[in-house]
Amino acid sequence: MTYPQINPVALDFGFIKIHWYGLMYLLAFLTVYLLANYRAKQSPDWSKKQIEDMVFFGALGAVIGGRMGYVLFYNLPFFLNDPISIFAIQNGGMSFHGGFLGVLLAMFLFNRKYRKTFFTTMDFVAPLVPLGLGFGRLGNFINNELWGKVTTSPFGMLISDEGVSRYPSQLYEGFLEGLILFIILWIFSKKSPPTMSVSALFLIFYGLFRFIIEFIRLPDEQLGYLAFGWLTMGQLLSFPMILLGLFLLKKAYSKREQHATIS
Image (tube, rainbow, N blue to C red; front, side):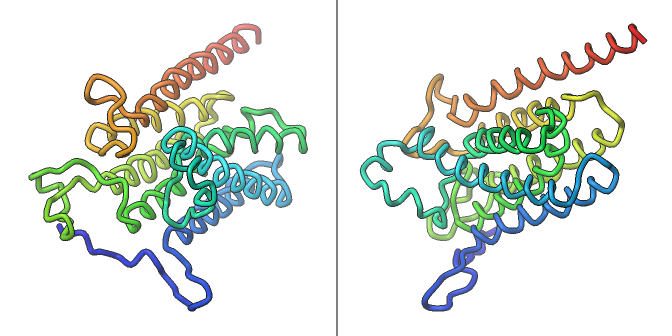
């Protein structure tokens, strides 16, 4: 396979350029909105206004948190030297973990407005997210960024500019964190799971998929490996997600058992 060298600019009107990276984010939020409306039809607890506000709050949290997370976790010295470049998100540079924290804060504010409990909202939101993550990884691929290690494997992709083949780790992440995670959460959420368990499963499988892919993905050049010659920032941030997810999953089913015993 050969990397197709896609122009990162989808539309150029002269006075304004629309990048594929931005369009992928729009597709991500549109997907969340459509899936949320579909799920809301099966739940009397969600109104159209609440869905619209949830997507708006979540989108702000994802974009602001994603950018600030990248700045703080991955490239703080660069942005301190050039603060204006923080706004150049069309060139890439978004952190999932920062976006995740931004969405958590956004949902906290959303819950205060509508007086919903945190995990009731997060269990509703979690299955909506993965396909959007998949679009984000497709944006990374089009932007020619976040490549994997050099390989002679048939699973690699030839990059003509470099003259070498690399693992298209963006596509692998899009497949696992996007499609596969979506299928897992969507099916699981249909089985009347206990509160907190859908959120827990999101944490476990996203963290696990990301941790695994990091072994073939190149670390950010400015950071390199953090320890042991293999530990990356992505793994360091994902491992606590797995642990927290396992804790929440155990707690969710323990509470269900306690309620069943009392009943």
